[in-house]
Image 1 (cartoon, one colour):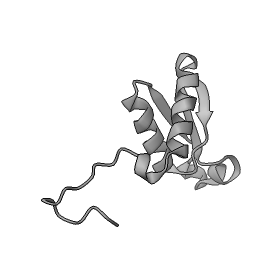
Image 2 (cartoon, rainbow, N blue to C red; image 1 turned 60 degrees about the horizontal axis):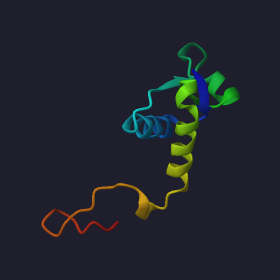
Image 3 (tube, rainbow, N blue to C red; image 1 turned 90 degrees about the vertical axis):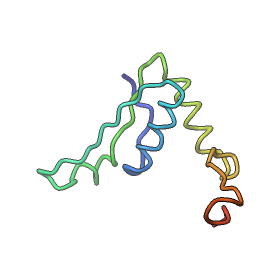
Image 4 (cartoon, rainbow, N blue to C red; image 1 turned 30 degrees about the vertical axis):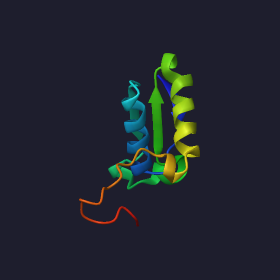
Length: 90
């Protein structure tokens, strides 16, 4: 497995893992949190890592870049229709 990136936090790690897995790329999240040291390693080394196989590395890198560069309108959020609750606007 090869290190793809260091996410800022657990939420970012989970979203990126989901994006990769939607495209058939197995990703592994490795957190640096250690309860014995109360997060000491995270403050020194960052939140953790996302790792993928070497065969999937280039495609995973492209997908992460595409996801980060996407404007909110380009992301695949389900749009609400007039018949559903809310207006669809924030």
